[in-house]
Length: 309
Image (cartoon, rainbow, N blue to C red; front, side):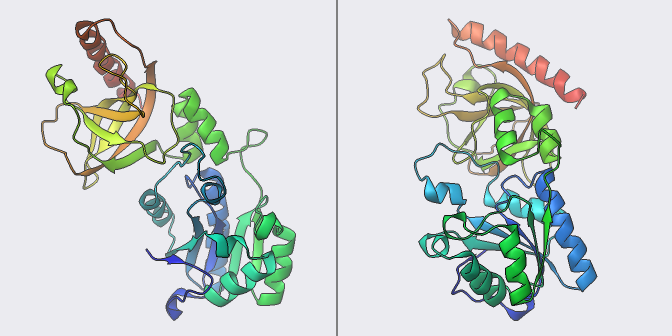
């Protein structure tokens, strides 16, 4: 998917959509409410449904050294949006040029000239333009000037409003039920299976290892998981997210997933690991024998957790 800037062009048949506009990291229940508003407008106006997202995430642009925080990678976000009936996803390249636009310039150059939008739905707390100068009020005023309607959607979830920040906090606690409820699906890490040290194989628990990259760091420990190994084939398993202190601490946390009753070779393939339930914190064991006994118990606990999920 090409990344668009204010001076980009898009095909004429991609213009004129009713869009939801925002970062949409996670495509959680709150985001889905904004997209549902745009969907309603698209049906009313007889135009396609689009979503315009900023990539990279504006927080990363302004804070390049911040710790990893993403809830999804770009391909996961596109799939989640497609499942909601979105026809077109527009990635707006968030760079110095875009960050320097005033709210009026953004509305004119991006929303009117580039996308030619018929309608824009945003969250009620949406801010845009240089220094976050624009808000829903200014967007509505600019929409009237440039020929598109605007809807602002209030947060959902009451006092504990659903937000990406709320979900990251739940991940840090290992509260996967809260995460799943807010996302309306399990949280998942997607990545290429890496060649590891094969220590798990020597213990009888071969693992598929995936780097966490830009994903937010969940509570370090052991999880019951389901793993999509391709073609929507979901396999049960147990995974460790951590630095593996017993056999030599890693410099960065790694996801190591052991798939039950699976003997294939996944090296180099892209898999998606859904974290279903937190089982225990990461621990350092005095011997490999003690570690193996605990891993055996982890498999039992994970199977039990997955039966009820």
